Length: 159
Image 1 (cartoon, helix red, strand yellow):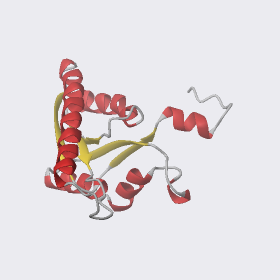
Image 2 (spheres, one colour):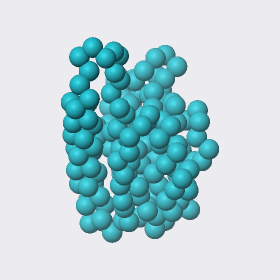
Image 3 (cartoon, one colour):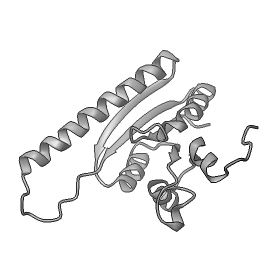
């Protein structure tokens, strides 16, 4: 079914809520998982006080941290006999996710939503909403349990 699954992550526990779903899909269908972390360049508002050396060091630090994070997840999935690889890419997050999915001919994008953002994004989160609006392939989108529990206080969500 889904032989190549793209999993965009940002290093947060909420984003990792998708991992158990992806693990099950990959295991049951013999699929390959591609972890992706997109480093969005920090916005420079003016040139006063702009130091290109510090800017470059910040990008390099973020990239190293992202690679270390994804390598840890790769080891966990490999230990479970799931084919996995990872990529750290620079660019605008939504556009980069969609470009990677297209270039690598990935069959599914799987991600968790943080559920943050303006009123139109209450149910999805800004990145998830952006992907959802422009995606041209299947998208598995879940909300993290903490988000759901906060939205429905006092409701028993166990199924």
